[in-house]
Length: 204
Length: 274
Image 1 (cartoon, rainbow over the protein chains, first blue to last red):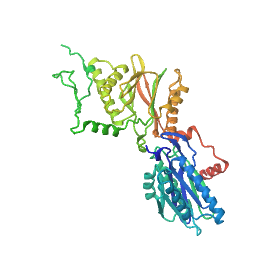
Image 2 (cartoon, one colour):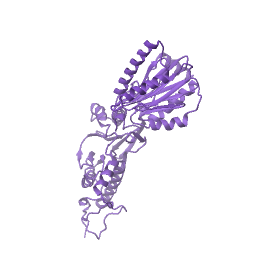
Image 3 (spheres, rainbow over the protein chains, first blue to last red):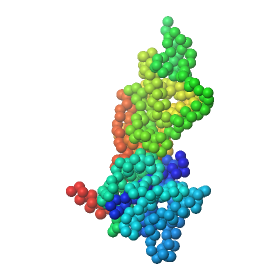
Image 4 (tube, chains in turn green, purple):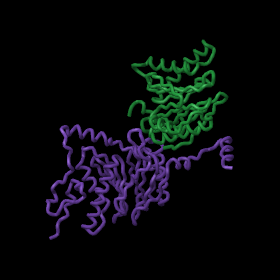
C-alpha cells in the first residue's frame, strides 16, 4: 500500500444554496490497524473558510499549522480575512514549493466568499487546483465517493437536505473502504451559522 | 482380494473432472494439474502469486472447551484497500461433524476444503466409519505441503468432534499442522487473541463461549481494517455442528458501547421518537 494509504482518510465537500458542507471520516490508522476513532481532518481557517486534509496524517497536521501561520500574518497585514480563492492559491503555492519532496496530502478547501457565494476546490499533493461547482472528494475512498456523489448530488439544495446528502454519501463510500470510516464528521456552513455534527457509522 | 487403501500416499489432488485415479492405474502415480504453456514460466508464476496476494486479511478463531468447539469468523473480503464483499462465508461445512475456516486466498480455501470433504467421504465409504479430525487435518496438510512454494495461500483451522472428543487443528500453506485448544488466524488475530485469551475458561457454557467468540471477533473488526461485516459463531458438539449466530458488527458496537446521549441529544432523540 502506498504512502497515501498509510493512515487512511476520506474527505468530501459539497455546494448547496448559499451554503456548503464539508465532511470527513474519523479514523486514524497505521496500515490496517485502527489507532484512533476521533481524528480531526477538517480545520477552520476563519469563520467562513475550512480546509480538509486527507492523506498522510503527519503532513496534514504540519501543513495545517503552516497555513494557519500564513493566514494569521495575512490578517495582521491586511486587517481582514483571506478570501477562499486567495487561500486556495496560497495552498497551491505552498505545496508546489515542495515539488521534489512533497507533503503527502490532498487538501479540500471550502469557503464562502464576501458575497456569501460558496467556493470549493481540491488539489493533488503538488498543488494542482481543481475548482468545482458541485462537489469535490479526496482520500483513500475517493473513487467510491466520486460515484456516490455523482448519483446523489442535486444543485441548489437547502442546508438540511445538503447535510443528509453529504452524510449518506460519506457513510456509504467509507463502508466500501477498509482504511477509512469509523464514524463521520460534518460541518454545514451558511452565512449566519456553522453547524457541526458527528455521524454514527459502522465501526468495522 | 481386498485392495489396500493407498489414497493417503497420494500427494496430488484429484483431476479437474473430479474423479479419483481409476482402479486400473497405479494409485501411486502422481496426478497433476495442467501447467500453463508460456515461455517464461517463472515470471508467470510470480505474477500469478502476486495476484493472489497472500495477505490473509480476515479474522477467524476457534477454541476447544468443555462442551465442544466454538468456531467464529468475520465476513469481509478486501482487494487492497477496496472492500469487495461484506458477506463472505468463511466457515465451511466439510461434513455434518466437521468445520473448516477460510483465511488467505478464498479460491484456494474453498477448493481445498471441498476436496477434503470428498476425501473424508471416500474414507467413510471405504472404512465404514467417520474420519477423525486428526486424519482429516493430516490429509489436508499433506496436500498443501506438496504445493509448498507455489503460491497457495491457505490458513485454515479444522474443527470437529470425533470418537476422541473435540478436536482442533491449524493447517497452513507452508505445510504446518498444529494441534491445539485455541487458535486465531488472519490479520485481525492479535486483537482476537487478546480478548479470547483473557476471557477463556475450559468450563464455560455454550452461551458464554459463544459470547466470548463474538466479542473477540467484534474487537478484531474494530481494530483491523481488513475484518468486518458479520460475526458468525458456530458450535461443534457430539451431534455435529450448529450455527449459533450471525451478528452485524456495526450493530454489535452500539450494543456493547451504547452512545451516552448528552441532554440536548437526548431531547432530540425523544422528540423524534414522539
